[in-house]
Each structure stands twice: as structure tokens, then as C-alpha cells.
Figure 1 (cartoon, rainbow, N blue to C red):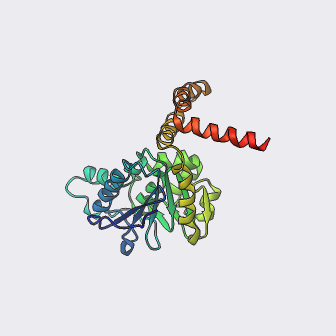
Figure 2: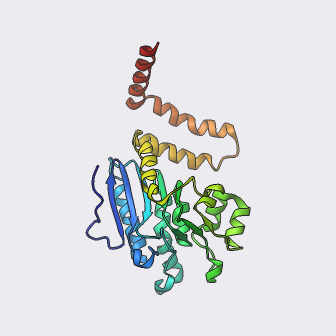
Figure 3: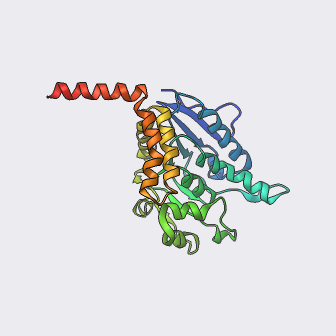
Length: 260
């Protein structure tokens, strides 16, 4: 276990390793953790630093203060709107590309690009103060960053339409009911729950976990059970040859023989 400490060159993002988990905190509460170009670059840099660390088995992402991430500040996109938007997207696309399991601990409003950050994670946990608000149309801007696709993957076309086209906002309990959040808990239980959940993934052999996550991404695109069987077979064959499996199987057999 190690204390959470801000890397010296990161102004807007704090990170640290706690019991095998990388805890990444957007730390600009004065602007409700809204993405700016520097914060997006820092988020990507933090993941680039944490992922190669063999002691890190999963990532938890949350926000400091009363918001998760209140969208993106698009007033400083620079000369090219296209390039500026792509740089903003990198704040959440880098999370979506992570090889490690990722949990969003949504502690307050997740708006626009902040919703994309939550959607980019494998699992979303919501505090009771969470608010999931796409808000693109209300701001007169088209959704970006794959927002409509990510939403549809998670909650289906009707809930996506209700939120994106009709401006519906889901609080924590409603997000859980619609499958946008895995669980909703009181705010003070949110990060402890995320750390507890993440610790289970971090306790498994790291390469096994990253292979399983990659497999899940592949099988999600398949339409046939037989294809899924074939996709998983090679990796399962690999796993039964690994020392971790041999050791855990032996420990289980020992436990069973003692019980009988």
C-alpha cells in the first residue's frame, strides 16, 4: 500500500498506487474537473506511467470535489477544431484503450466528455450524488468521441435517444436501474467500493487479466457462439500451462482433500 501523491509535473491529475490499484483523480475542482487540453494530456501520461508498472493490476478513476467531470472546455481548441477535438478526446480514449480493467467511481456530475470518460471504463460505480448528463444538444454541439456508440453499447437505443436527443439526466439510482452504473452507493462508500472491486482483478495474474479483457473486446463483436469458443480456446490453453493455474489448482485440491 502506498499513499496517494501528485506527480510533480501534473497540475490537474493526481495518481498513486494503492494495494495493486492505480487510483487516478481528476483534480481541478474549481472548474468541476472539466477537461482542458492539459488535463487530457496529463490523463494520458498518467496511464502511460501506470500501465507498464507490474504492481498495478487495475485502474480506478474518480474526481476531486463535488464533480466527476463537468465536460470539456472547448474555448481553447487552437487553430484546428478537428485537431483540438481529437486532443480533448484523448483524455477518455486513452482510458478506453487501457489493457487493464478500469472502474469509474462517478462521484458527482458526469457531463458530455465527462460522460465519455465514465463510458470509456469497463465498469461504472455511482455515488448517490452522481448525475449522468450528455448535454450536447442543450449546448448546441454535436456529440463527439464516439458518445452515441458507447451509450448504445451500454444502455441500448431507447435510453440513448432519451438522454442524447431528449435531454434526460440520470441520477445515481436511475443509472443503476438502467444499467449505466453497475451499482449506486452512498457517496462515502463509493471509492472504497471501487477499490474493493478493483482489488479482485488486481489479485489475479496480470497477464491473464489483460488477456481476458482483450478477449471480451473481441467476443463482443462476434455473432456466433462457435466463433467465441474458438476465440477463447487458445488463451485458455495458454492459461492452464501457467504456474499460477498449477499453484491455485494444487491449493484447491489440497483444501478439498482436507475437507473430505
